[in-house]
Image (cartoon, rainbow, N blue to C red; front, side):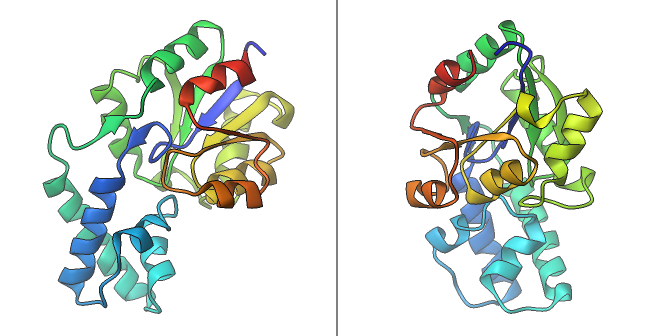
Length: 215
């Protein structure tokens, strides 16, 4: 369908940020003095707003969550060295093809607006992405439908014209609650079982498979 609105998650869907995120989370946990968590435990909450990630891992106060988030942001800047993050296979060429076929491409992410814009510029995807919503742009974050409904409202699209693509159950639930079609990718931070359990409309193993769904 040409002119379809596609809303992408970023981490684990377009870019492989798992090692960077989990390393930074584990360093944050150590610095704040919380009980250690495994890389897999840290990865399980990628996609939630930053403070909510730590709340999902620990029974801690809002103040400690905010301290974790601030510590994480500082350590992230130190850890995010050139080459640390790469696009998943076939992302760049598929994004270009979707754009050339008339799809409107946007991002809804739980990382900050400026952070995702910097990554898009680094990967030269900014020319194809029309609209970006970061965690600091929304009143309610995924899995709430607000990022999807806000994007549709801003760009003039209806749910039946909209596709949400993500690797985590939070992405799928966000899209479903907004009435959009959803696609889960299996190569990111989530699991196939999670994507199937939350009943994504389609599940793909390769980003290029979007072309058969959309076009």
